[in-house]
Structures are given as C-alpha cells and as structure tokens.
Image (cartoon, rainbow over all chains, first blue to last red; front, side):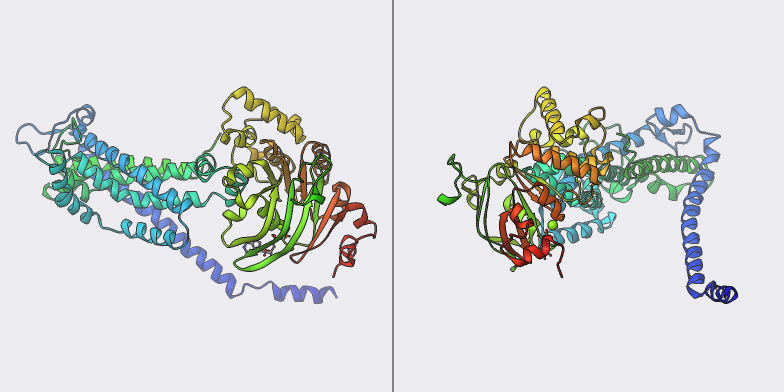
Length: 307
Length: 261
Ligand SMILES: Nc1ncnc2c1ncn2[C@@H]1O[C@H](COP(=O)(O)OP(=O)(O)O)[C@@H](O)[C@H]1O
Ligand SMILES: [Mg+2]
C-alpha cells in the first residue's frame, strides 16, 4: 500500500518541460533586468571617468556654480562657470512647466473624467501621436514659426529666447505628462466616484475633492517626469533658446542650456582636454539632477504617503 | 397622487413607485413595479441576485443618469414630487442616503468622510462640521470606537467599522430616506446586529429601504417587505404575513422558507 503510494508520488515529482521553461524564462528575465542596471551604471561610470580628469584638476567648485563665464576655449583665460547654463536650463524648464502643467492636467482630467466613448479614444490616440513627434521637429517649429510669432506679437528683435524654448518644451512635455496623469486618474476606483455622486456631489466636486486627492501621487510624478524631461531635452532647446550665455532678465532674453552646450561643443574638443572634461562634468551634473528627479517621481508613485 | 396612499396626516408617502420599468441598453430587468414606501417604515426588499434590487435603488436616486445604457419608464414620486421632472438631481440625491454592499470609505480621513457631504453643501464652520460629524458617528454607533482617530484614513478601519462609517456618511445630510444595499455582505455578525439596532432607532426619524440577501434580516427589521424575482415584483406585503405562510404568492413562501430551485 505504502510503497504503491510512494511510487505514484515519485512519478508525479518530476521536473517536466514547464518546470524547465519556467526556469529558463526566469533566467532570461534576470539577465534582461540586470543588464539594464549594468548599462545605467556603466554610463554613469563612463561619464564620471571622462569628467574626473577635469574634476580633480581644473575644477573649482565656486567657479563652476558661481561664475557665469563659460569660456572654455579662451586663449589665455579659460573659465568654466556653469551658472548661466544652469540658470538657462532652469528658466526654460520653469517656463515649460508653467505651460505644460495646466495643459496636461486639464487634458488628463477632460480625457479621464469628462470625455466618453469615441471622443475619449480619439483624444488618447491624438495625445500619443503628439508624444511621438521628434524633438528636432519641435525645435524646427520653434526656430521658424514661434520665432516669427514672438517677434510680431511682442515687438522684440529676436524670438529665440526663454519664452520660445519654454513654450516648445512645454508642448513637448505635455503629451507624456497627460498620459501619466490620466493613468493616475484611471487608477482611482469608480466606487469612490459612485459613492460621492450618490451623496449629491457634482461632477466637479467629485473630481476636486475625491479623484484628485486620491490620484495625487500619480499627478505629482507626472509633473516631476515632465521636469526631468525638461532638464534633459537637448535638440529643441538648442534650436529655440537662442543659445547665448546669459542670466535672463526677462522671458525675452536668449539663454543657453546645459544639454545644448554639451551637444554643440563636444564635437570640437580634444579628448582629454580641460574643455572635454568640463563638458563631461556638466554631464555628471545633469545626470545627477535627472536621476534625483526621476527617483523622487518614483518614490512619490510608490506612495510615501505617511499621512 | 393616489388618495389611498396618503397617511392620516395627509403627507404623501416618501416614495410612490408607479409602473416603473428599468432597462439596460433596451433589455428590461425590472417590469411594471408599483408600490409605495411609507414614512418612518423600514421597507425590506428581498430576492435572489440579479432580480433588479440594486437597479431599483439606482433608479430611486436617479443614478440612472450616471449609468451608461440605463433607462427607466413609469414614475417615481419622492414626497409627492415626480423625480423625472427634478431639475437639480444633486439636490435630490442629497435627500437620499445610500449605503453600498461593500464599505466604500472615500480615500479621506474618518472625519472628512462624514464631513464630505456637508462640505459640498456649503457648510464651512468648523464647529458646525464637528457637531455633524459627532452626531452622525454616534447615530451609526461608531463614535466611541473612532473618536480618538478621527484624522486617520477611513480605509484603515476594520470592515465592520467602515460600513458603519458609510452609514454615518449617508446620514450626514439629514436624508429623508436611507437606502441600504445588502450592507451586511462584508460585515461580521456582531457588527450586523449593531447596525440593525441602529436602523431600528433611526426609523423614528427617517424612512429606510433595506435591500437584503438575508431573508431573516428582513423578517427581523422590515415592517413591510417586497419580493423581487427576475425583474418582477412578485408581491409587497406585511413582513409578518410573508414569513408566516400568509404570502399571496407561493413563490414568496418558497423563497423565504429557503425552498428555492
Ligand atoms: N450597469 C449595468 N449594465 C448592464 N446590465 C446591468 C447593469 N447593472 C445590472 N445589470 C443587470 O441587471 C440585472 C439586475 O441587476 P441588479 O439590479 O444588480 O440585481 P440585484 O441587485 O438584485 O442582484 C442583472 O441581470 C444585471 O446583470
Ligand atoms: Mg445587488
């Protein structure tokens, strides 16, 4: 009796094809996941390595963050002040968020809460389409159309400035922010809406008092990812910002962004030179900032809601 | 308004349902319902799942407006007013409290859950809100358990507490009619008993519709009971009669005695 049972069990207890399949898939996934991490760490190590020679030699903290003079190629007085570039990037991003936050949150609320059926589906497709426009195309729009519009509208000599780059960047970031924000709204269970509606709350009261607070984390992370995008964007900013070193006094001043500086100058430097190292130091700085922003966004999404 | 339905006082019943039919995308799921719900009574609705009980409640507070595909014909009079001609449905819903089968605490604090409805009706004074919150939590037999944790999230309460929180919330606008939809589905027997006591007390102040999947609950609480079956209102009668073999329809007797195929 007993031996018969154990024979049956022994027959059951075999590693069959699906067992091995499972192991294989696990292994493949592991390699995929790990290599993504390795790549990111590798990129950081590479950027750091290229920047180190400069960081430990020509780098001065006060000059880098305190001076607006970025003169990497000057014959007798090289200075590497990144302040104007940092301010340039920050002002463009700030301008962009001024535009993108209301637009994207408004669009997300409309798509997620008000639109139904066909309207909703077509709007979602449209937003995704907008997100797919290459940044060089946006830059081109800034360089040609926006430039003229700003000159005409505000009667200023140049239209390539904080306003232009900010608007372009805002329009670029809005679709992806809309998508993320709408996902956050969709994640709020319908039972909350129903419960509030049953108490006689109007649509807007339901959105403002129930849906938005419940989706708060997702919405904040949508904004943060938009900001991250703003800091990292290069091509459109290079084309629309005017690319001149400046602490802007108004939105009509041209500025230069960190990313645009790297893109424009890296091709003309000698590998290993101070200039080369300084550009990579800008890269490290950018990497750290975007990393921090994304990390914050991620933590917010996971909800450090210690309320 | 029908003469026969009026109470001695002359006030119309809280609800007069006349030839009400409900359909989803053209498919009728409740046919020709006609009955009244009197003031200050507990009106039980029993019937197997899918018989149209929840849909009936939705029609009463005009949630059909918010449910795609849901249509109604016939009429529902609330205190003598035809709800079909009601121009501000938000104000109608404020007169009718609803408790859903599963506790649906809003993602807010205990306090804010109860203060939600008064707030959206424009109550701003902290003192007044405090009073409403305490009164409703007391009426729902929850105050003593949560008075020290009013600021913690409503969703952190136990299932039974959350269900009483929903009742407190439903009472926060001083409704004339409270509708409960299978409130005890996710609640332990002790809490169920406590809520039943609460309902018995509330009856003196408001009218209650109690949809329940437990026929004994209707027997314990309801003054009159309606039996819904597959979209038909089989009968409406005194609860005592239904549960003592004096039902008019044999299907009702079969159902309340648990002999249902
Ligand atoms: N939103 C809806 N759309 C389509 N059909 C529905 C919807 N809600 C309920 N129904 C259908 O209506 C019938 C009655 O449902 P319901 O009122 O929930 O019954 P009960 O509450 O008695 O279980 C069921 O057949 C159900 O499938
Ligand atoms: Mg139901």
